[in-house]
Amino acid sequence: MGIRAQQKEKTRRSLIDAAFHQLSAEHGFSNLSLREVAREAGIAPTSFYRHFKDMNELGLTMVDEGGLMLRQLMRKARQRINRGGSSVIRISTETFMEFVESNPNVFRLLLQERSGNSAAFRKAVNREIKHFVEELTDYLTHHTDLDRSLATIQSEAMLIIVFSAGAEALDMELEARTQLAKRVILQLTMIASGAHYLSNHEPEM
Image 1 (cartoon, rainbow, N blue to C red):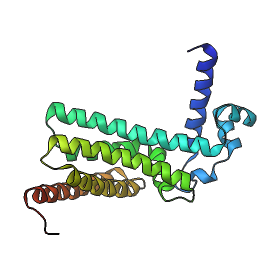
Image 2 (cartoon, rainbow, N blue to C red):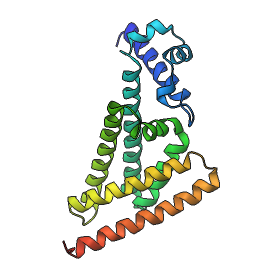
Image 3 (spheres, rainbow, N blue to C red):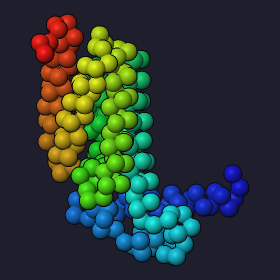
């Protein structure tokens, strides 16, 4: 990569970071100003268009990046589990809570835009969630006795619980988050136990 390309990538990165930094519970992506984002990134507003077509393209890039960050972190957690034999539910829950604590605005974006006004953003977030469910389903089918249909249902149920817990955790102090994580671990364990039971007892349809 040449110097010019490196500088362009650095500026693009600065714009993404600036937009994430400006998010908050009261200030969602739809409230962000191109001018404010450009100012924090240290460039002129007109230079923004050298990197993104418009603010929507920037936002969709942020959604993709946020989803990828979370999936990569959970992959690393599963690798730790495979090496050390630790509880998949405990390690995964702790890793997810650490992600929310360390990257509140990244998770806040996924959470807010999942039910936002933009169909393009909702579709992008749902695509990232689908990837998350598929990766967890793959893991469960390879490491448990579940068939793919039950593994998918378990993955979907787990995601609903952890996303809901993540939303709560955004406004919690450390001790409250610790108690929340314990509750989530118990809830996920109950779901896993139910899935295991169903895999060994043909449900009545």
